[in-house]
Length: 143
Image 1: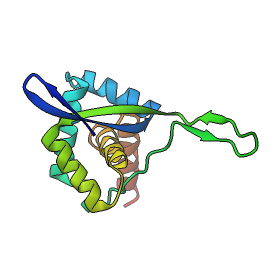
Image 2: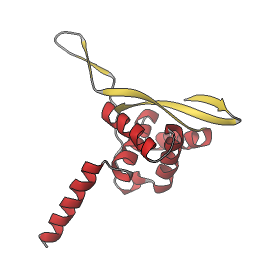
Image 3: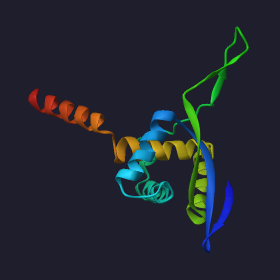
């Protein structure tokens, strides 16, 4: 965790890795919500800590490396993941680090899980909302 001082406030910046499509979606989501990435990350972290979705079945998601080694050739291939620096208030970062230690997972995996939850459950893409609505309608038809 890197601690930064900005306009009289302390922030922490933590590196995690996300699938490239998810990173692009979170950037678009911040724009759609009329927020900066930093303020959206802060809102996401606060809501994640309040709602505690891991207590209700959300599984911790491990991050993947940016490249993998091909066993036969010994060269590397791109995984489709990118490094993302998530900046939140220092106090929030301390709470997230404590949660990671309590759950025995890496801080990077915690941040990835948090952003996954935000993008997939709190603000799912339109195609996913449509799919969920269809599934719900089909379930209603069969009862």
